[in-house]
Image 1 (spheres, rainbow, N blue to C red):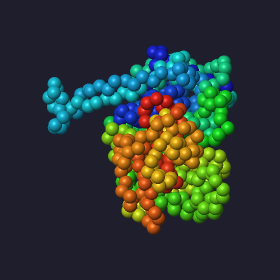
Image 2 (cartoon, one colour; image 1 turned 120 degrees about the vertical axis):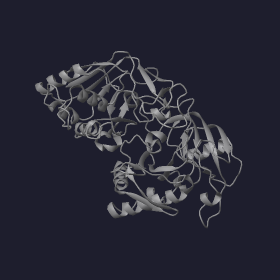
Image 3 (cartoon, helix red, strand yellow; image 1 turned 180 degrees about the vertical axis):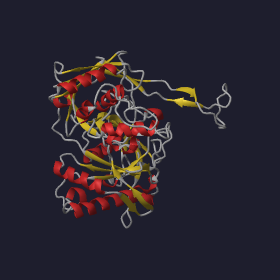
Image 4 (tube, rainbow, N blue to C red; image 1 turned 90 degrees about the vertical axis):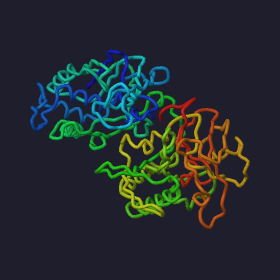
Length: 493
């Protein structure tokens, strides 16, 4: 057994799990600290023997075998405060500081000539009920590795940001009780965990920063080995597991995985994008797996009450300066989908390296692998629990009636697999969300088919519901996709 405990000396912890803190769009801070942060702290504590021209090796007192051991140890069980009332997320106030470099910008600082003021958003400070977290691996540890880990742990001064001082200790027994979080294939929480190559990626990150072109901006997205997430589930979820399975959301981002270059398409092309996405998935499935099943094609299903896969376009909505542009795609598989089919679909999406369709040029694609940006392509953007949801793309009426009341929209939600009743519905011809997409009838209705009414909706449910939420008569084509609105009942997914 290997157990590494981090004691938060100030009782608080600050880190940016998704890269959204500088944008002000983060919903909460990181808790518990990911095992990847622990490995990063231990690596920085005594360095490695990475060679940088003009600088001596950084390793002090160890041969580095302990880091190789830890990065291949797998996903640990995590003992930490978790759940409602045990962890407080405090949003820190933004502040303005002076940029170090002078510039001729018109936004110069009033009191410092030639300098520019810039806003700093520090994100969230997390205060857990018990100010410590323990990572436990059920593995045997060689004595030399244990001694080296203790040496490194003694040199760690903080975890996450520098204003989170910590004391790290290494033991061979796990704490009493059950862990708060455990790895689970169907868990709802995504936690960054080391894997083989993580230390080499950090060395490359360090070399790029202090090497020949020292000081250059370096992003984690440039080093895929640093983006490895594992699904975890909370102990409370295991105890109160519901027999009703959840939908599976497989996301694809518009980006070149080698160059980490983002791309986007106008939100008004949503129908063409989802049409091209479906065609690409079915073609790749047939070429590399087998004949696509009815849940993907929409053909051959019998009876009523069944659910089909949704082909979604993922827009940038909800933020003050949201544009509504599409940054990625998602295949939403219905609850109860065979895990073998889920794995086959994930493999198909991994093979999809580009998308091309009517009205837009070839766009490079890559399967989402934990990238922090863009937020629209992160499953956590859509798989949240909230009481109020609003449409990013307008919802198409299921019937031609123009009278929408709570009962009618509750029926739409039941058809989409959401049993919670709608307490209040707000109907608008124009978008309700910032960045919501306003579509013309020709951009909604299919050619050669009778047109149906459509509108933007704000849905307030009787109690919080878990996303993704997609409603209306064209939900298989991505219309009626909803985003959570901050407020009563909102929590991470």
